[in-house]
Length: 429
Image (cartoon, rainbow, N blue to C red):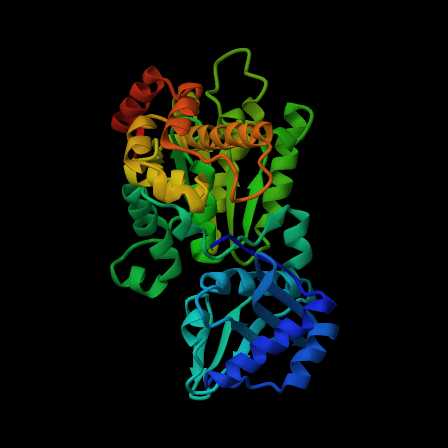
């Protein structure tokens, strides 16, 4: 089975949407809205479809009434080919309707509607016996322009689940960050104060940015990345720009604010004469202190060189936790390989061998090796004159091992040893 692709509705997709609507009725899941209403919304309002190969296997259709958004039809084919399409369809429809400034996105189902589970697992909450479900839009109308102004965005809701393996890191982030912020009453019961700022450290390419995005996705909060390199041309300009963007971010109701390579603006301050970025470091220290007084915001900083950070940054009271993010474990490496090995060829690949051979590599290293093997296989196929699936040159475990042999590890053994030392001396879990 190939990969499902989500795209906008086209006029010539209407017959397929009609078939989906009719199939829903035949399986006892009669849509609430009539076929005429659904087809009218396809043409005049908002619709997206899920495509497998050249066939439409799912559709989601919505329309807006003032600040309320309604899903007038949502369905996938019932033979299994549309499995997995629901999250992408719902997220794509929400993104398409978000610029309208909706406060909620709602859907009506019959009492025995078979799409109930797909909706509830994608953020909708059951409200009434009529199976009225809604989910809050992550950003309200009044915040849309502000979010765009600070370069923020709404991430897909399922990033947390895509981070395979790394169970220790995920458990720490879930317990220390996500749960106290998402379940305030439970946290209060145990006297847990929700975190305001956290530092992630580890070798380059180990997924610190991925984890920061996954936390934002898990919380269903906007993700705002602040890039040190874009703050200004000179030290004075950088400090002013830093304060300006934090002032604007503080107007958001909720947000995960991410600063990667924070050592660029938080390096150790040294004596006389002061370093060129000392003013920026001083400003950032003040902003972190102010940031901690604001509920609903989480600052996540990441660094490849935790030893380079100014000592004041790692003191208690500024960052709640200093968490290590290391190289992917065996389960994570297996998932990464599974992401890049073509599905049709996976049965012939010895993943145990690849997992063992890629120990010590970052996710980016493994992706490079997998893509290199695929590219070389394509070159062989072109050279042999292959034009289709039946006569294409396949990929074997040896091809991936060969590509690994040409892959330079991002993290050296000495860097890995230094990371383990930093865990002992600097981590705060």
